[in-house]
Image (cartoon, rainbow, N blue to C red; front, side, top):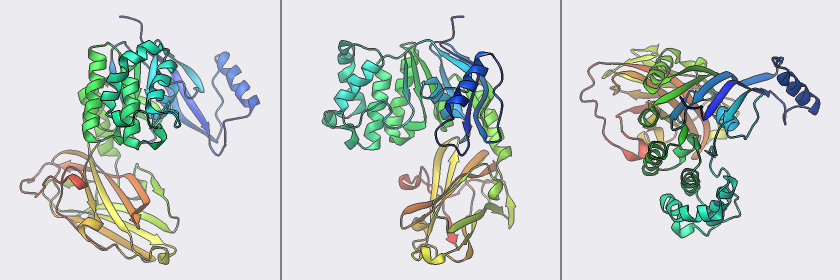
Length: 412
């Protein structure tokens, strides 16, 4: 077997909680000296380990997916491989030219035009101006930004940014292409186009792709092998099918209701506090739902200052299957008027017939005030679906609210 193009050995990354900037020069030198002498870096109570003892290899021409829950360490891993941040211990060896797309506008200078940024990125990758010029028309056509190619990219929309950034990364012939979840910014048609390009880059050009995504269907279609990160550690490195089975099994058994769920609450308004978010079937809290039977989702809250929400709030309950958002039940669309806010209250979304047959369904809950998000709780619940009488659920295509529309009603 040929030498691995990516070789990661005992890679760890530590952050110091509550610290602005990294560490003092003395601490940095001490850590460097300990690593040089092969000693373990001493832990501190303020330490947060984003990655811990990660080891794996990737062969030339492989397309490898990286999956895991939010906060598992996926983005930190890619930043280390892209040389954006240094590891605390261990090493990562990349034997080839690397192009990374980790966030919108990576590597772009906002005051330069699209044309100038293409040549700038080519120079960063070590390509000559003639080499970039040969690829220029193909890049612009793929990104679909012909009319705006001489416009400063700071005036681009996020979708235009991503289209051009991906086109540059994919066409300027890097040996290693690293892609984070940033492709989710683009529309569905462009995402499909990008997946096709990544597949052809690997199959026809023999280049290596490392692809991070929450969309398991995309990972399954593109990747022959996958890495599963959990809480900063590599839980499984195997075939995509095996990794996906393990990940879905963990979702099904690890999901729960209320504040103990796996997800974290991002609350942008301190006056509104979530007490719990629970799935209820037959008047009993549950983590499972039988296809065709009723289920409800209840959000309980308390509010220190109801007057701050005088216009009422709206709530969304969002369903994901295998990383793809299928349903968004939005109270403003289904109910019309926002919910008035009390010092203590609850809002319930009732679904007469659960449409999912088998497997885990991730459920998020969001709240908004005057069309601005004030609460985002992703992965608030994981509901394990059980096969049943799912026929005649009334599920129909509905583009604006996800891929489907599900009959439901709200009360609160």
